[in-house]
Amino acid sequence: QVQLLESGGGSVQAGGSLSLSCAVSGLTFDGYTMGWVRQAPGKEREWVSAITWSSDATAYADSVKGRFTISRDNAKKTVYLQMSSLKPDDTAVYYCAASLRWFARFRPTDFDYFGQGTQVTVSS
Image (cartoon, rainbow, N blue to C red; front, side, top):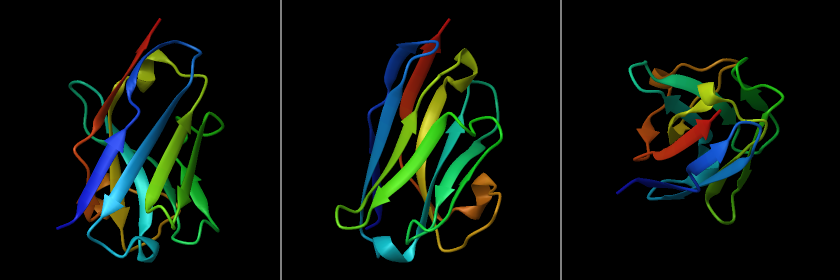
């Protein structure tokens, strides 16, 4: 059974930082591109970031480029998202996601598996 379990969400003031983690089980972790997508209230899911299985490439949505950093530890089967300079517009449920493919820019539908999500709230 594939499981993606996010942790690290919470509330922070604008300009602050948060770090998300996602522990993965039930799939060959180092065979998958890993990523993050988010969904704000009343909006569609939005792709945030992705990283190749070997960490040799990363990709970011324009809205988070320069502020968010994705990384992974294949030995721990965990992917991370370090978020800094957070804005109220970053408020959303953040989902960890896994894909067998790589694109320069992803859509949420490009991912094969999703976690249950973790809430991130940024107040002004």
